[in-house]
Figure 1 (cartoon, rainbow, N blue to C red):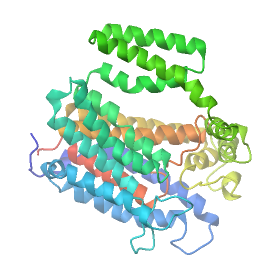
Figure 2 (tube, rainbow, N blue to C red):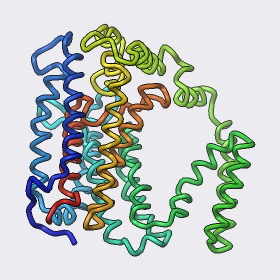
Figure 3 (spheres, one colour):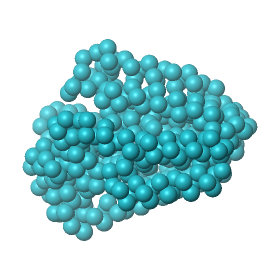
Figure 4 (tube, rainbow, N blue to C red):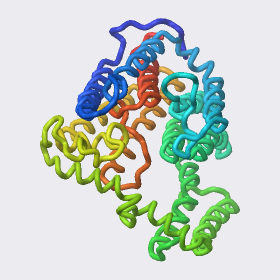
Length: 409
């Protein structure tokens, strides 16, 4: 049941709080270094702006602690609808750097609505799945959750903001699995993607066809459905090379460069090359706080946000990055633990959603920093600078505390 009683400070999951405090402190230390040679007023450098945005962030966290859990559940769909409206509004304004991600509301800074859409989409998904928990064994029951997530995802992709769109989409499979959906149904959602990717290598496609067939056989759906699933995926895979060949050479090169930025070292790969150089030059223990040459000579792009791990690697060393990742892993484990022990399905599912969002940010940001994936423009939670992003992280932090198992409500 979702109750309404108040909480006491002793009920707060202190391990989660200390992890967030540690990560936020590291972020401020690094941003202070970045801001040393920054030209501009006192609130024009990343450190000062982070301090400024920390105030509403902490206030938001504390405010959420006093909101009854049943209220969050009750207004989940309303918040989701409002977030969709706000994500659409930037399209009616002027573009920023060719994108429609930001919303001007008369303040000295713009707001990025998609950051908050991540939160409210996860909450709406948690409500639907918790309200229809007994129906999750049927395939058609997963259609509405998919639609709930695809609406904001498609809007954000058209802004365009692929990184945030991926993060909005990421929680749906873990939350569906947590709600009791059959793993076979989740497999079916991913199967067409694998069929398309594997089709470009004969051996890989053959192995995938065997895996697909065995999985369908073990799941034992109806005969007509089994044939439809198998041959439908095979057809999609066989069609992929023809679709690829129908593209112009220019379009093919754009896709190949996206997959492998090293093909364009002065363009798409420049950021990754500078990032890897910064981390490599820092070694195990770093050059020292404030002594990063890649950072302070401005070779490293977007250093206060997307590539802040590169700054940490250059100045504080790989050891510090390792500690940060360990602490963040510990934070995710603690959130998962609270989800497992939660008193109600809604809270449990929402916690899974927030953990997935945080984990997606960390994975993409870290992999991007070392060149494992193309640059996606996703900051690192609690460490990277950013107004809307920082406030969104602390709102999720507040919701995690509120929905944790140790509360009496």
